[in-house]
Each structure stands twice: as structure tokens, then as C-alpha cells.
Length: 231
Ligand SMILES: [Zn+2]
Image (cartoon, rainbow, N blue to C red; front, side, top):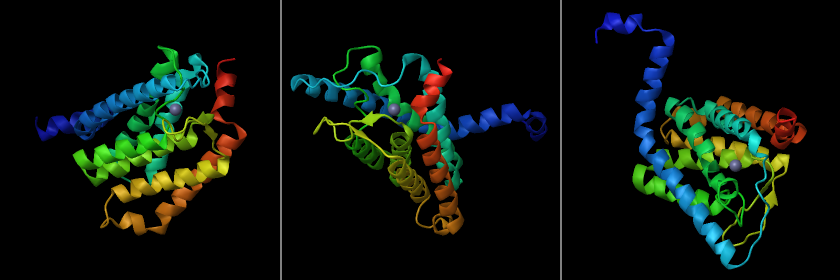
């Protein structure tokens, strides 16, 4: 391809080309993450079944799944903004949305535990796999993405499954703190030598994002706007 033909490309074409160039190397890890998530969800449901745990049914109305997907894509992107890393702009939304693959349980097959991968132990597993396979950038990236999801998901989460099957609901303050922590992991993903992590402006941005998301969750939590949109 000549330089002239590249110049003639429209913005959407160049944008799609750039997304593909940055995103393609991430696809194998995203695929493995989705399989890990499903495997984990199966294990948790199997163990819960073995000890006769009967948890809540699906916690979101089914027709709101598209809204839920947009919410996780958008918040994954927003929390990654202070990092100014285009690969994270793709990875964070993809994995933040990807965590919800465990909704297969409850929506498609019977579930003993709803949202079985929404647990800190799955976060730890995903981070260890990412670290061993792809190194620290991916480990911080997946940790930030999954914690962003947990921070803004609303409802009750089986945070310690399958060790304990109790469920916890995060307060807006905890959600805000978790957003800052997740965004901090994105900054750490850039590496020790990147100036961004020592730039107070990155942390101020992160603080503003966390406060706005926490206020939004407190005033119009996702469950509320699901019900508004789905009538
Ligand atoms: Zn979720």
C-alpha cells in the first residue's frame, strides 16, 4: 500500500485498522480469559451444588443485558483513560465485559450461585495466569478490568466463592475506592519507568472518575436504570 492510498483512507477505516492492529495480539488472552471464567463458574456451581447452596436467581432482568454490556464496556474504558494507553483502552472494556460470561449460569443453565466468577479468588487466578503467560502489563490490565467490573456492577456479589458462599453488596464509598484501585492498576501496567504513574494529574483524573461513578451508582444505580429502560 502506498503512502498516498493511506492518506486517502477515511477516518473510520483508519480507526478500524488501528483497533485491529492493537487488538489482534490481545485476542488469545481474551479468549483464554473467557474460557477460564466459564471453567471457574462451572467449578463454583458444582461445589455449591455439592454443599446444597441455593443462591439468588439471575440478579438482572434478562432484557437489560444489552444495557449491562454497554455499561461495562463504557466503565472499563473510562477507568482506563488516566493511563493514556491505547492497548488498555481495548483490553479494559473487553475484559470488564468478559467477566459476565458467567451469566451463562442462570440464563442458560440452572445456577446454584449467580455471578459465580464475581469473586476475588477468580480475580487472583486471572492475574496469576496473565502474569505467567503475558507478564506484568497483562496482569495489571486484567486485575484493573475485573475490579472495575466488580466496583460498578451493583447488587450482591459472592466475593469469596467457592470458599464461602455468602454475598456482599458494596457501598458507594467502597465502589469509589475500588475504582481508584482498579485505575491505579492500569497506571502500574504502564511500568515503573512511565512518568504517568507519578503524575498527580493522572490520580486527580482517577479520583474525579471514581467520585462521579460512585455518585452515579448511589443516585441511579444500574439496577434502577435497567428497570427504567426496560419499563
Ligand atoms: Zn457482572
